[in-house]
Length: 363
Image 1 (tube, rainbow, N blue to C red):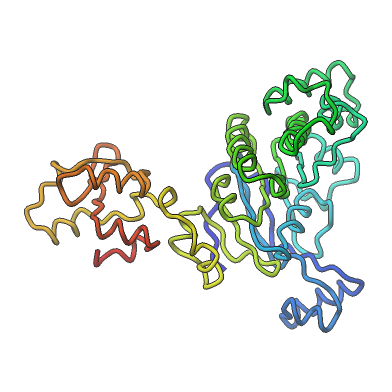
Image 2 (cartoon, helix red, strand yellow):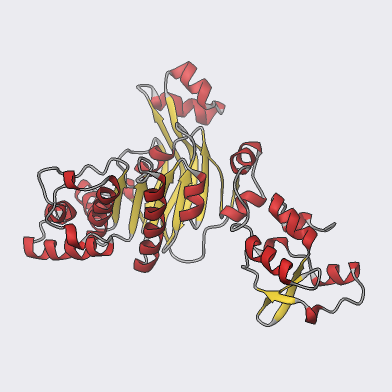
């Protein structure tokens, strides 16, 4: 398994060697896993138990959108339910804001869910007999917040998701995308630091889905929230996430940014997963540039000062445009007024193919 370090900053969620085994003999199965290293198939055959999550560790930093993706049965939805103890782990720890949630009393756990962690499911489960604003305010009602106060808070949350004009309507009058917005407003109304999203957009039409993806990312960043977002769609994970964890058979196979995963897949499974993804807006100049010394040694007398300049974060699409506009056969990459590398047409093509900077020596 290959895991990249979490983003700098305060860690809000810290999962340490999480396991979840379902079945009547889960305790015996866990003992066998520990003592004999049994795999998912052996556990099913010998104990008739299902390994939902297998030795998963991850960290989510403040302000980060962390996507967990995998195919059906990979364990991603089980993992997100462990984060707020909707289900209890068989082994391992979940630390939220420095507190082990397994050690919390039921009142403490309810308080943490109500105030610190919001959750939105694929089935948003709006109450049909309640208006939009009443649905958005429901979590605050459970907390005992007075009606006037909770309705005002819910109204503000609905404004954030673009439903200010729909507060008195009922769920049956809303489209699927609008109902998901109500679910998000309900989660935001409690002003949680962490939002858990379990495939909330997967049942929507592609156009509405992309719109909500962009709106969710923008809103989360504007409000300074942290989010864990579950999806089976790599394009969605790339569009939304700051970092991505790819799961298979209950285990996290690789964690990193989209660029890191595409350039350095941990194994053949991940490589196959990312094979069809366009690199144009994912891979940046810093990943495909050659060193200045290497470029100059291959082209003695080259005048780097005459090259078109760009930043380390320029993507391949931009680099292609600059290369087409340039009279020279290279683009200078500049950081803090210093040329830190050079992108050549060959290194650019290798980047389109998905080759890491460490493999560009011959470009």
